[in-house]
Length: 500
Image: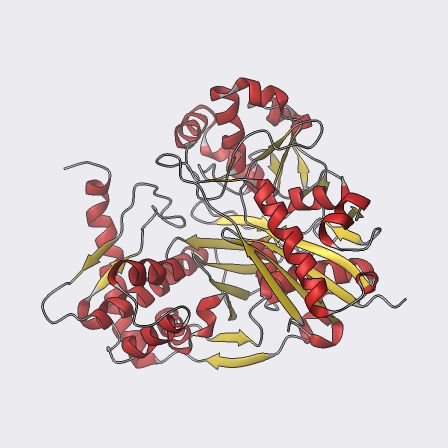
């Protein structure tokens, strides 16, 4: 039987998505399914999920995918998995999850990071991993459990990422992909190996760190138990997969240095492709899921969640997804710069390049002339300002952008995409399909199984539907409001930290 279909599984923060592709379809999914799950906020700075919720949702999504598409599961050549970053899935010797999993937004380990940076110096971590030690990363979360719940630490046989846990449930093999290993403070970015001596020095058992795999490396095949849960055929190859934003970048066609993925999901961000690991203490450096490539990444909490919060708090103009189209129509009537209304989108602290868990969201410039539409436009522009801030931090390391490829729900909005092009001064292309992370994950499986000869072939099949060129006149307006945006945080940061 000819095996030419590929399945990509995307473990997001709010849902697991499964998408079916074939070579001739490019990045257009033949079928997409999605099953949601909750996020838990038990106390300030704690953000948790249950990995078994991920598995149940992923299994259900794949079952539905196979049923809806009507394909024979034996025609699937391989499965790739991408996942949200910086999780700490603690499993015992039988592979059972033994405690709630802190995810990327969890910052409970901030004090541990401060202590380690003081003891070892930031240079020690930067020189090895090319990244500073941050509270959202996986390694300090392991130490948090060791210090607060030593019994959980003793019982932990391995610490997995979200995609690694799904791969384990499918194959029974423990794995950790190299594209996410930067979140552990003991990963040698250049050599691509764990530094076990440094791991012991920091107080963590090296045997807790799973074997490292390249993202397109086959870790195993679907077991009988995995097949029963998902409907996949026993023996289907499963690759290690990788970081969601890295797979998103691949799915958008970012495979050459200078090409950049602009992410517009619930949060925002960017991933710039390079051919060497870049050290930048304001951003995140990681290995790309494409061999021989690296990514310099920035992320902001300001994205689609801003509009979701605004519509939920102050009332939407329509129901469901139509509310966002109405927001666009209203914001289009407001001039660039929103007549001086500027938002700091730090609704859950801020990630790069600010790295301030105490940062707060602020609307500045409110007066009686401001309408609901002004606030919507300010939300859209704030995400663009955050993107520009990250791009400027990358430029400080000499990393330049040739073109951006937009992905995520925000890319469906021509207005929002144009605002980002105008604010940053960079052209933005929009791929035809929006399941770019799942396509990137599926591409990894396609390269591993020979469906694609290489990443160049996969990228050539990606169709671009829109291209947004920056408007110089509008950029001049945004330059002034961006200056205000940057000044607001500098002036207000002491107050955000409780200082007079």
